[in-house]
Length: 170
Image 1 (cartoon, one colour):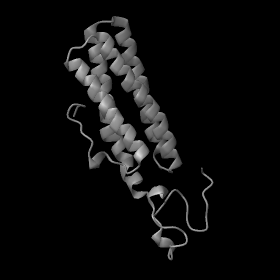
Image 2 (cartoon, helix red, strand yellow; image 1 turned 90 degrees about the vertical axis):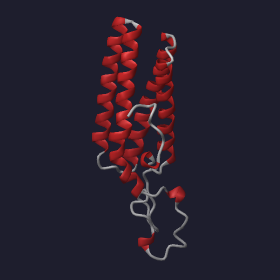
Image 3 (tube, one colour; image 1 turned 60 degrees about the vertical axis):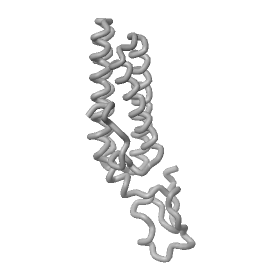
Image 4 (spheres, rainbow, N blue to C red; image 1 turned 30 degrees about the vertical axis):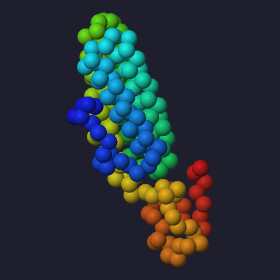
């Protein structure tokens, strides 16, 4: 699947707005990059769209890692390692493109990077989605300690808080 055929769907939804909004933005940027390539725009425009995608992706990696760590995701370290691997591979691809400075080389670099990032969204991020979906953001929990009569009524692992307990992870 490429970014032209990639559409936001329930399958991609983690149920955490801050993560999902960044993923939606990534899809828009990836489509913009692909459109600039298919429309055969000038190289500076392709580079600009690639830079927008890279900047958003790398900032998202940092945010996602902080978020997953904060949610106690047990495979956080492995996911962060995947981000490092992607970042390293992006650096290698860009270095090669800079060495050649041809339109073809930059298009090839952009397509390789876009494919790698889309695959990460579809495959690697799909691994943590069930974990996040099992959590209920406290902002969405309608009850309160005053209305909960049974501790089991609280959502499992709701950011570590239970009635009578306060998380000091903030």
